[in-house]
Structure formats: structure tokens, C-alpha cells
Image (cartoon, rainbow, N blue to C red; front, top):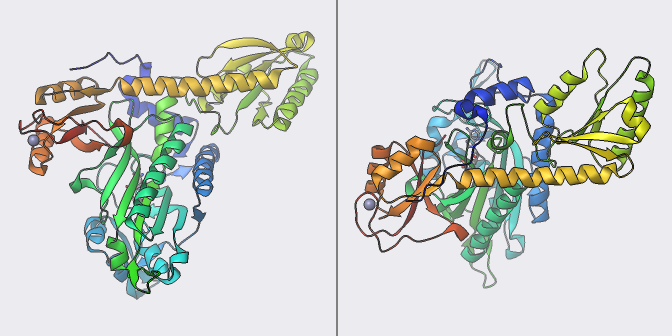
Length: 485
Ligand code: P5A
Ligand code: ZN
């Protein structure tokens, strides 16, 4: 059994959930006081963080040939019900629109829980010939799921307000298979940019996306040791294209159903970003998504206000023209101490303190958000110094969060060890498994945890030849088990 002692995190680790609620409310990022359960409001600052994240998502998808679209929110019941497996799993989570004013509608309309059944009837109209393929689109929209598990801000909401869904159609199984790999690569890039550690896991048969052939999920570990699924990529095979009759004409004149994939990410990724990096003083944001990268705080003395402020604006203008997102915190009647508190809470990667003495000396004090380390630098090369601090911070964030998560992935060989490890520090345990569903469900009940599935991709390692952790029968693969959100 390998169980390295996890590196120390922060004081709030013991009460992560409280910390998370407090930080998002205090910054504020997200206001959950709206009186409809499972909904929330992106505040102006929260919206800017969200925009930074959606910008990364858009860039990565557009770079890889996906076009952005926008489909209607409403789906007629006969369309939602077309693919049997899909509707079977979603039916308990659908919100219905049944009336227009006082009149009952002829056709009940669902608020989309996801958009396969809205998009694929249009694919049927759009796709005729081989030359129409591949078709690769995405949208970033709100979807509605009547979640019955406990709702949590951003993590499990009933109105998912940042649902990025990509949908693709291909001529052959091989091309669709290659697209699944590309989807996984795109998500890996997105999470790397957010400095988020993850593992990629192929979900078991019984936990795949309804209507899919198989599902590969990205899972991360939150500070309380519980696992959060932050994205999924699904191979859809021809299930939906048969249900929706999406065909193209091949070179020989025969028609074939297209092969499809889809993949999704939501504001969960933003919750994970906040949770992975934040500390007792508030948010710590990677520079790429920080709404304010540099906060300039004037240190004013009586009689020097004008001069100091003027210099602060000058510095800000210089930083902005160098492409940095910089502001001067020129709030009156607010002490520098309170301003430090504000920008630490908001997670600005770098703060500049600027007073009369610095101005005289041609220097400035830079403070890096994660370490709160102070350095005095010359004014002339300040842009380069700031960029260096930001990239140091970005590197530190991924290093620290990866090390923290790696220490919470343990290999075990007995049911007792599974329990011990999960009770001790949560995270993910890996064990040999026979592959049988009944055995899996028995194991889930014994250890009060969920089977995430089998490792996917480079982390794939087969624990074959030894006995299943639960039943002793020869193992077919490694299995991952965790307590999850
Ligand atoms: C893929 C996109 C789908 O819906 N259809 C289109 C596919 N997959 S999924 O796994 O069901 O959802 C994609 C990701 O969305 C996040 N998510 C949620 N986030 C917040 N609140 C919810 N209630 C919620 N439900 C799903 C998950 O990260 C999931 O991987
Ligand atoms: Zn077994």
C-alpha cells in the first residue's frame, strides 16, 4: 500500500464547504440568495472570471475547428423522447413548460437538460453528403436539470448557466474515435490553463452518459477530499443518428448513419478553480483568468495625494498599454490595509504599492498573491518583473495543486484499505477489479463510495493477473473508487 503523507494545505481545509460559500459571497463571485433553489447570480466580478474561463474554452474549440452556434432552450416532448436510453435517464430531471398564459400548449416543451435532442434533428437537415462532414459545433448556454441530490453553488445547480456543449458528426467510427481523443486533448489543455489537476477515467457501463457507447470523465479532488467530475467526453456511436435518422450519402451512392461524439463542461470547472487555489485570504487566480492582474494601491500621505495618484495612473496606463489588466484602487477614505484585503480577496496575481518614497527612488513594491512575498523593483523594467511574478505564480499553482492531488491517489489491495484511506483523507483509491457490475455495486456499498471507472489514456495501467480487491476473481483492470459530489 502506497500512502504518502499529503502535503499540508491550508487552515480552512477542515471546513472547505464553509470556506467556499464564504469566499464566493464575500468577493463576491456568485450570489446564491436568489429565491429559487439551485440557481445563482454571477456578480460583475464573478462574471469577469467566468468570461476569462469561457474565453479559454472558446479559443481552444475554435482553434480545433468547432463553430459556435445557439439553439433554442425549448425542446418539444416528442423530440426529447426520441432516443430511448437518453430520455429514460433524463426524464426525472426535466422541467416542463405546459402553458402559454392560461392556455395549455398542444405540445409540452422541455427546458433543455442538454441539447442532443434539440441539435440532432437539425443535423438531420444539415447533413446530406460526405462533404458535409465532419460537422463540429458548440454552444455555451444555460440548461436545466431538476437535480434531487443536495444543490451547491456552481457545483450542482438546477439552472446550469455556463454549460458548454460540443457536438460532432463523422463519416466513420474511426473518425469519431479520433474526435473523442481530440475532445479529451482539448479539455486537458483547458484544465492545464486553469492550473487544475485531474485524472481521466472511463466510466463504468452503468454510469455512462445516457445514449452513449462510453464516457470518459475528468475528475478532480476538492479540498475536502471529495471528487468532482469537471468534464465529460462521450462516444455516441450511431445511437442518436439512428434515432434521429442522420445519414449521409457515401461515394457508392449508399446512405450511412453518421458517427457522433459530444462533450461538456460547466461552471463546476470554475468552482474547482476557486477551490484548488484559494486560501485563507480569499481567491488566488491564475493570471490568464484574473479579471485584474495588477492592482495599484496608492500609499498616500497628507499633501502628497495628487502626486502619488498621478504616478499611479501613469503606471496603470503603462501596464495597460503593455497588455496587462491593471487598475488603480483610488477609493477615497479607504486605508491601504483595506485595499490589500480587497485585492487579496479578489485574487489579483500582483499588487503594486506606490508611495512618495518609492516615487522619489524610482522604485515600486510588488506583492505576489499566492506567497504574499514582497519585492522592491526599479520602475523602468516593471512590466517584465510583473510578467515574471505572474508566471511564477501560475507555475506554483499547478505544481502545488498537482502535488496535493497526487498525494491523494493511493493504490490499495483490500477492501479495508479502501475504507481506511477514504476515511483518512478521501481522494481516489485504485485497486484491481474483476469488471463485474454486481461485484462493483457490492464494493460501493461496503465502502460507502462510488466507482469512478477505469484509468483512461497515459495513466492506464492494467492490474491484470492478480485478484479483484473485492471478490478475489482474476482482475481485468484497475478501478478507481472515491467519495464524490
Ligand atoms: C456532453 C455535452 C452531457 O450533458 N451532452 C452535451 C453531454 N454530459 S454531462 O456529463 O451530463 O454534463 C457535462 C458536464 O456538465 C457538468 N454538470 C453540472 N454542473 C453543474 N451543475 C449540474 N447540475 C451539472 N450537471 C452536469 C459536469 O461537469 C458534467 O461533466
Ligand atoms: Zn470482483
